[in-house]
Length: 454
Ligand code: MV4
Image (cartoon, rainbow, N blue to C red; front, top):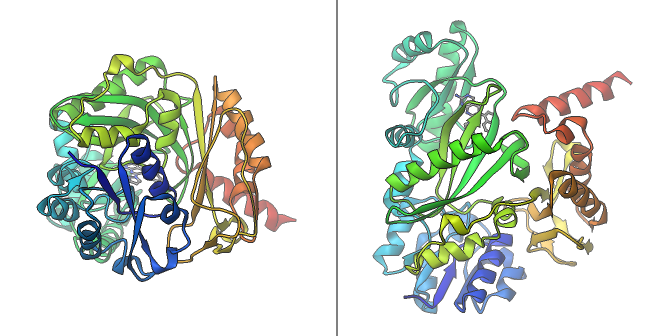
């Protein structure tokens, strides 16, 4: 059906997709901005084409530039990776209108699931429990206040067009509702051009557990188990692991069956992730569905033996989905996101030339990266420079391998989050698997209080 794939992305995920194409015998076309001329994805691809200047809005975010590149190079399919235009329903539709196969879910699914309160309603109808709250967006401040009284404080005010924590406010008591509502509305207006808000009961110190799904677009759907992404800071994930240290076989079965059932009902196509909040009592609630391949997909690949990016492409080619009974989850995988940032300066970006780059290896270690010695990290894009993935027979072995690999990893020329990861992996709380989504922020506050006291 298609033989040449345009990769509408950069960095490590562009390399990851090129590798999948090569294994499937497909030609790859890389696109790059002028800031990315010397990037590895340009060298790895069969062909490459410059699509514009350093600004993302004029290159990686430009449908015109991307479609022109696809037409000139004779690409017949587009893989969007993550970020940039991956969850832009209009771009998916534009690709289809130009007779390019979109390696992802339908524009209709991207659109419906991108509206967070619409997604919640759809999932509820498909039997997926959501967090108690308003039935869709609220009309105004007064209606919001009434609903907050009904469900009881604390409440969470969320933007319909939101995601990733933007336009979201936690309100502890009725006195603070008005200011929280106005702030959420202003942020939603400026970030999404859509000020619609909905209200939910606030779950206190939840864990973030997500289910990896693969659908065939005809009602067939399988899962690759869960990922625990509770180690975050300001909605940026730092460490992910699979399986979750707090999910037992019975809970896993319920979460995975719920997610597969809902995605099948939607006739979902391609890779997708259903995000859940897990509370201290072990109740889980649907939060949102991501309609893309995610950064942390390799840990699911490691515990399942399934190549998720290849499966995305196979499904887009119309090939049948692998069957659930052939997916055997075993072992434990952990991923640390290595960023060119300075943890001592509030994780400020640290772009520049990488003068020394010694990558770890050995048993159970995988490094997904686009960086090489001498590479100049441009300041215009995401600061992630590598994903370090450790696999072991059990959690302890994966942890020991991760610590060993972090200590082998040598990067000079830029500051990185490697020392921070080592510190995290040595905390009693992470070792015990006893953390939640606010834990890193609370830990760092305590550390700076300690530093101020001496
Ligand atoms: C919540 C919540 C507590 N209660 N909703 C954060 C991003 C967006 N996807 C939804 N988020 C949350 N929604 C209710 N009703 C707590 C969060 C939340 C969070 C969720 C997942 C991972 C990290 C988080 C950090 C802070 C807040």
